[in-house]
Length: 177
Image 1 (cartoon, one colour):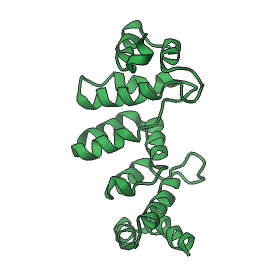
Image 2 (image 1 turned 180 degrees about the vertical axis):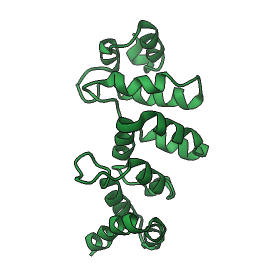
Image 3 (image 1 turned 180 degrees about the horizontal axis):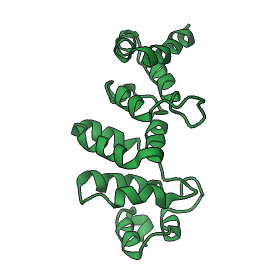
Image 4 (image 1 turned 135 degrees about the vertical axis):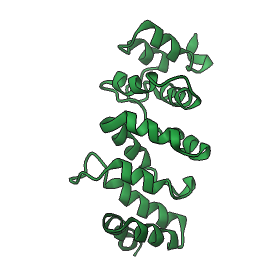
């Protein structure tokens, strides 16, 4: 029964976001709300056949408490980063501080194929708390897909020496040696 309930969410979302939000808010358990939000996040999956906007899905999901966000919300943020990183970063910057922190906490690791492309838009931001937190999050995840230590993964990045030095400042103390 829960599959049938949560499968209504993406249909409602595509037709009327207000109705979808009210439907999800009325679901009696966190698990059902997360399941419904997960189905909406799936609309933006790279594997999905439709081209629903990750911006719309992200803006919709953050209307709910971070504890209700689905695990695949990171995929929505990652997809948005892939198609319009400056737009995503501007959106994060305008969120209230509590939501900024929650989004940064789920910010996806850099791609193992071209990680530089995921770092560059953030490195180009002016000095800010958001920039530092995003770089910290991404540096901590470096090498997670390739079995390299963050320090080894950082050394392999095709970035300027200055950029690498800055990123090295975000390495955990254990990895700096």
